Picture 1: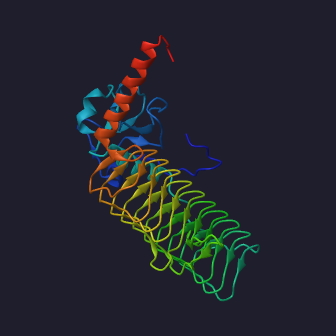
Picture 2: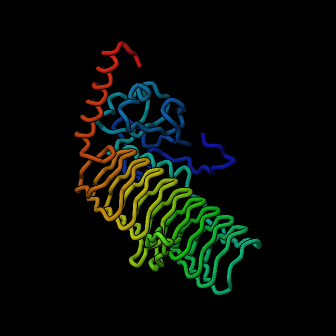
Picture 3: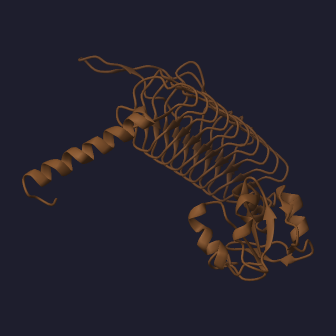
Length: 346
């Protein structure tokens, strides 16, 4: 059970109501009127709680669970213990996420502007927006309805936030336009100068960064991530992108819709990712490249060439995934053979 000091639980809900909210189906033989009061992991769930199975590694835990109901793929429904109700879904994790959102909905803003906030008279603040103590909203900024601006966050001159956007504590935004339902987590930096200068032995010369950051609807940008503004063209984060903590996105980068960028990854300037690209943790992409739709970049990879649509690459320099796995296996055999040859075990 989530700690009630930090999370407000809604419900209870019937199995039929959760099916409606999640798009799942009540399995034959399961009681649609079963009442569930919470969600929990398979090995911790009690009879009045809902759990889920999305990974075959946890089939044994599924078969032993005491949960009242479980969201599961139809192919694994036969592994359920007797008496456990089932919600059937082709995408159990998504269905569970929608159920969990029902039990733990986001808290609605109160519309309170703290006396300790600093809102310029020339800024526009939409109805129902919260602005916490220490936050600064500068002249010309436009904040949509039902937004939440956290403590000590800074919304710069002429920045625009769409409705239902959340800005975390100590985040700073400048030279940027945000769509609706965007979440910027604490400490993120959006719209600062891109890393652009002309190199010279007599002293490097700064190149003015005259673009913006444009963030489309339904984007999340994690804690302490940075998104540089463009040098002339804009830096663009496409609709529905999910960007993890400590990610660096350089100037003029363009992310298509639905990209996933995982912690500590970095994208150099002017690189373009098509829609639904996945860049795993600590991967790095050099500048001026094109990454095709649906491509997947393995963790800690170094990408130095264009990657085609749907291609999976890994390693540094990154190569097709199968080639990289063969390289890793070959290196392992080489090291083992050398150690065996000189009698060492390390």
